[in-house]
Picture 1 (cartoon, rainbow, N blue to C red):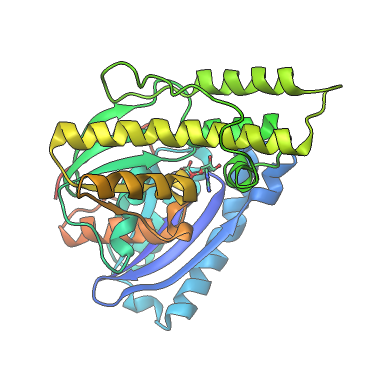
Picture 2: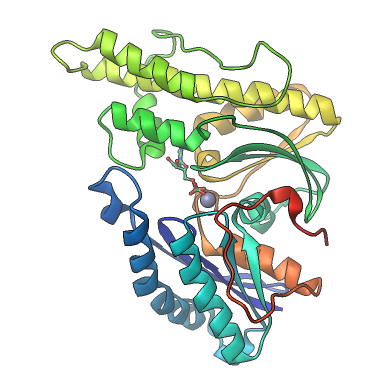
Length: 341
Ligand code: KG4
Ligand code: ZN
């Protein structure tokens, strides 16, 4: 089956073509970062309008890059939620309409299921069952995964998502939006032990997270260390390092706990923050100690992309699932409510 995938849930227009026999045939991404950077965060209406401008040209581009004709496409997948409602409706309208025009089935994909399955696009994909750490700009979740659509939420953030905390601390440090990759870059120049940030909610049982206190701790540290409202460059890097270390070790502690609790040995990490090199390094080390294995996707498939939506949609379409002719998007959508295949 050859599936066109469209991702428009937030600030990237991602379009890709996945072939169940040959793998990923084409994958194109247009990032709106420059549009939103000037405001320090995503402006939903600007996001929707830009998706409208970019989605169809990208559809044309990936069909050409895949070297196929329109009639080779046997299904269309689009992100139906969670995300910004206007942005989602752009992808849903285009995806549903193309499918109707081509006379093929369409499927609305859960954005986090897309992230969760992205490591499946890599050369040695994980085998079910496994534990998934989903860490994006909007979600921080630990999920027990027995198969596609067989998800049990083990824990999640009670306040900010990990990526959101990175973005907010990035802003406090005067870094451009999105802050995650910028904080990581700055942290690489920082000293490891100069500042000690807390590891929230690690000294009590459970698998939930909370990152908003860490954000406040960062704000206070920045205020204490600033001279005339300015941080010297080394202190700035040291704070970035301490913050990154605290997020990474908090995530790592909870991942170890989730593996112990479930008795599983495989951990996958997915979503934008799974591109973080320090997170990968620490988790690799921890898993080696317990004879476990870590799986993740290449960085371009960790952040939002069309390939993960094409892949997840393809699995569901091949199982015989599809949407009726209505155009639907769900800004909030529980991962556990998805049908198993
Ligand atoms: O999955 P994603 O592209 O979009 C959402 O579904 O939210 O995740 C974006 C998030 C942003 O918060 C971004 O700052 C963060 O992932 N991120 C990172 C890194 N790369 C992206 N955070 C830390 N380190 C990185 N290298
Ligand atoms: Zn995402």
